[in-house]
Length: 146
Image (cartoon, rainbow, N blue to C red; front, side, top):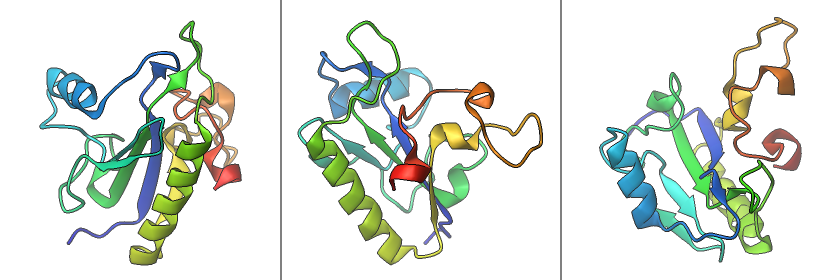
């Protein structure tokens, strides 16, 4: 089994008024050259947690961190106009917390962060600030909430 030291939360960057299935996610990732969905788990708007990649398989979700991380993605992340927004439903919030707690039982040393928290600290002040984010993903502050 791989050594896991990081759990990374992502959003699918899809509009809140449009369904985005796990099949569409896989199709889009394959079109980008990935060998299937890059995330290990996908959380639909109804809270359903879908395993999309075996944990033993290295992910394709956070460049430079994939070898020792688990990727979780929730459906959504954009408002109806395509602007970044925390679109998580109450079911998604609950499922995300349950999933992370379960993973932390298996990987107690793993830190949890949002994809945007892996952006480079350009001003070298020890904090990743909004002006340094490469992406808005996951459209909420994982470090504060979880």
